[in-house]
Image 1 (cartoon, rainbow, N blue to C red):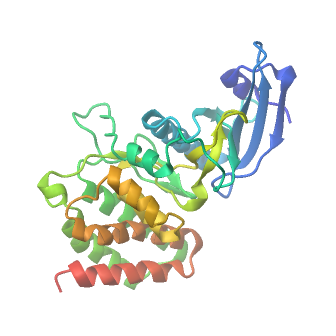
Image 2: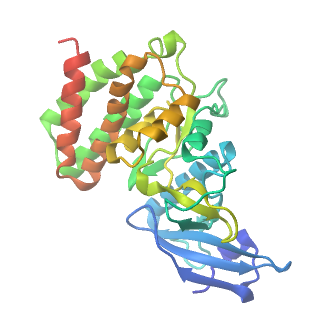
Length: 331
């Protein structure tokens, strides 16, 4: 395979000493992946990971992942591969690409350096680093500068000052519309989502309620952190010490506990992980509502999976909403 001129311009390798081969892992249904190995004029060799895809969906997805990785890398550089850029092939303008540092994955049980931070510590660092202030605003906002994709679902990340408003509108109502487009209208589901949005979200997530009335500060979250998007590996070169890493991100500036919804849905992050994490990033007050907040955040991912795959994911969403509306819906 020959490198497109747009990628050559981005990376600056010697094309005569560059190899391109197919690689596994794409993070979505439509991306193809490649490993690029380049030798530079100073004699060094470096590996890169490239995703490619056709059409507008791929363009949106890669722009979102590029911004996601850069936001995470800016806060905790060792937590994820660095994105080197995205764009369109010069030879095939309908083909989009994303290039990142290559991640040499090892076993989750691989021996890590005693100096390496744990995943819990890195995630706590990410979740206690305030989001930047967007251009045109005077304080951090909930949202993200570009659309990001959770699986194949594009997410509306338009900024909102209120976390409750963002979660209600940009996540729950938005994914309900997508689920209905995929699976047809569903009166029970729509009624439950509207009850959750109008009753449960204000009750659990209102700015004047969280953190003893002080509200919460937006932080970067990965956005799709199930166990398949976390591993142990070496970034950039096969030489080095393995570390805990995450990838295939779908970031936004959010409440840190939002991250825990997808982590709980599929498991893989045990009690010792959460204990270490919360020692460094304490549960938001009121602590006695923590489990219900995480359930509320898990709901979005059940609805997203229902929108993407249909089937039994509706049942999980309905079960969560019925329990929360019963508890917080005021009868």
